[in-house]
Image 1 (cartoon, rainbow, N blue to C red):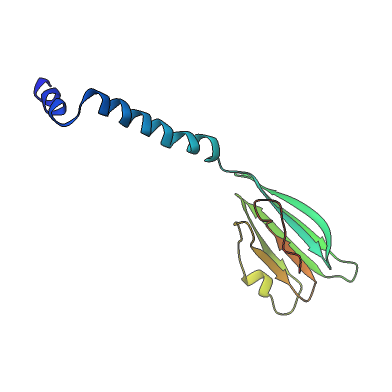
Image 2: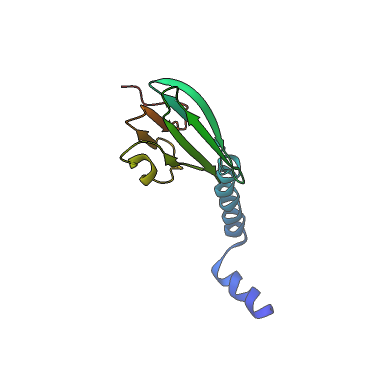
Length: 129
């Protein structure tokens, strides 16, 4: 152990270790402040009108069935900060085949049902053409 301490003294001056420790602390502070995983949400819109908001949190697992007046049906599944359309009564099933989304800005679109599921951008903004 004594030999190791002597080698350290040859490489580093006492103030070098203080500066190095300070830089390591400064590097960790932003991670502690910002590094926590935010809880995301998803928005269900049909024909441009907001129908439902979903919380996408770790450990959440449930389904939501959207039924339109004309009989259109979409089963939406929420699981561990992700969302998808598990089944739909539309003929092409593209919304089902799109699979899970979990990142800000991602969308699932079911054109026959005029249905959109969107995870808003982190600032809360949504795409509005």
